[in-house]
Length: 69
Image (cartoon, rainbow, N blue to C red):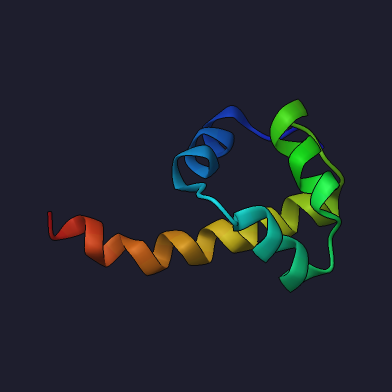
C-alpha cells in the first residue's frame, strides 16, 4: 500500500525517538518493516494500520497540549 503524502507528512511531524520500537512491540510488527515503510513510503496493510493507529493515539494525546500554546 502506498502511504498518502499528507498522512506521511503528519506521521513524520509526530515521529520521535523510540516510536518504531513502541509500534513494533504493541502491534507485533517487525521494526524493519516500519523502517522500510518510512523509507519507501509504502508498506503492507497490517504495517500501515499499526503505524496509523499509533500516530492517531499519539496525536490525540498531544493535541490538548498543542492547542494551549
